[in-house]
Image 1: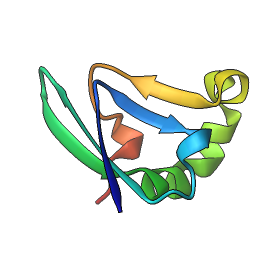
Image 2 (image 1 turned 45 degrees about the vertical axis):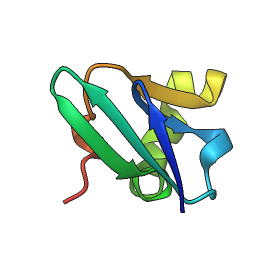
Image 3 (image 1 turned 135 degrees about the horizontal axis):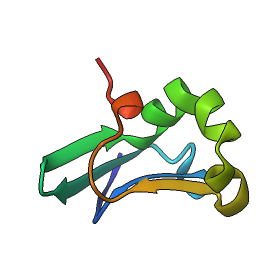
Length: 71
């Protein structure tokens, strides 16, 4: 599994299927997530987002989105 450190939460079409674990830190804490797991669970939601259709990614620099949190 490849591990990446980013400055923000990101789900990107270019990372799908690459089994990447991403870690990022904000004022609210440090978060680590499996890109493919989050994409798989939220695929329908992401595919309908304008940013994902237009730019091929979704980012959030402030926090881990509530819909992306795995139980």
